[in-house]
Length: 254
Image (cartoon, rainbow, N blue to C red; front, side):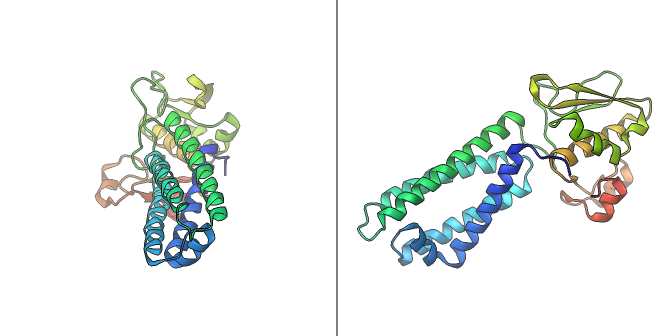
């Protein structure tokens, strides 16, 4: 598998962190209260469980959306709210101020990481995708499909050496000569296929290559996993990763 962009690696870490924390807050809120230094009472246990639901929702959103930009920004807002509640808890004489201080510092650190990843995603993908694909903005046509007259092209947020193995897996070279160019604005690599074959098929395979490089898997609706053929649209379902047989058929298996 090719290397993932740093913001994607960090977002997955944050998603896993939210999942583990959310489970703990729902299952053993009294232990979490003791760990962070707040008084263990019914009200605080209820707050922990509410925060646990929030963390689990964030984890689900991070792994479900590509890119998860709005979910990450919501985490930043949640971090700020949590810091406010912890600071107020310092006034409680039954609170452990040492543990609370350490907890506040940890939450501030997570908030900084959430903000960093959110900003990185916002710069790379200003608009949210549909079914796992990042969309272009009008001001920058190179965000998704590069505009090369007469030839299918796409911009992938990775280096040429990271892209080549995926192109080989999908046998895209069979369509024609492949040209690699640095994408404008340091946005990755522009891949151009010089071909006279059906451009829609070539474009579909280029999109699969983009997803395999940037996401690590092909995520799209079963409505047209092999392209835009009408017969495939008779069995539509919500977007989800393809199973092993579908991936193998498309040449995207590991």
